[in-house]
Length: 344
Image (cartoon, rainbow, N blue to C red):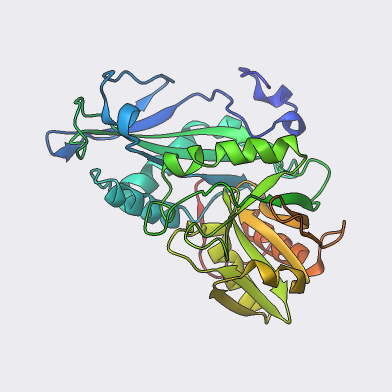
C-alpha cells in the first residue's frame, strides 16, 4: 500500500489500489440528548466507544461511498452527493437511527474534499478521491433496541483506477447456496450486514478464479438480483434491462446509466430477470461507484454447471455508457442534469 507522504507531488497515483490511505482530516457529527452537534473537524483516525455499543453487537451501522474527480478543466467535482445523502437517510430510517439532514451530509462531504485537497489525484491518472460517510449507533446497552446516540463520520482516501490497463470484462459465478439479503430485509439500504453476508460466497468465488458472485433472489432462486456489491444490467434488442426487487440496493451509478441509456435511444426496463434470460443478452455488466461499469465476459453457475460467454472484448454499448458517465464526472462534457457539485 502507498504510504502517506507530506509531499503528495511525488505520489505514484497509478500504484494506488482501492484501499485506505491516511489523509489529513475527517469530519464528524455526534447525536446525543436528542440533537446533533455542530460539525467537528479532526485529524484523529480512531473512534472511542463503549464496548457495549449497539453497533458492535447488533449491526446498527450504515455507510455510503462516492467520489470526487479532478476534471479536465482543473475543477474538482463531487458526483451526485445529494443522492448519496438521501440514500444514507433511508438507511438510517431502516435501522431506527437518528436521521441526519441532507444538508449536514452534503456539507460534510464538501468540507472533507476541501480539507484534503492535496490528496485529490491529478486529471489523467484515472485515480480519484473516494469519500466514505459512515454512521454508527453508539448507545451502550445489552437489549436489542434502537440506539439513542449516534456518530456520523465522513472521511476520504485517494483510490486508483479500477481497471489498471483499461476497462476489460470480468468473470462472474452464480452461487445458489448463499443469499446476500432476504426479501423485505435490508437489501435495499446500504448497511454493513449485507456485505458481511456476502463474504463467504465471495471468497469461494475468488478461490475458483471469479471476480464477483451473482446472487439470485432469496425466495425462489429464479431471478438475478445483484452482482457482488454492484447492480446488474443486460443489453439486448435496443434495451437496457436491470433487476427490480425489494432487496436490491438502488445504485446511484445504475440510476445515472439508465438516464444515459435513454439519452442514447435505448429503452430502459426495470423488471425481474430470470436466469434463463442470460443467454439472450448481447452484453451485460455490473455497475457501481468503484468501477462505474465492470463488463461481464463470462458467467458460470456453480450449482448447475451452466455457463454463459459474452466474449473477451468490452461491448460497444457498455463502452459508450462508461465513457458517457466518465465524461460527466471529469468535466469533459456538459453536465446537463446537474449531477456534479463543483467544490474547488
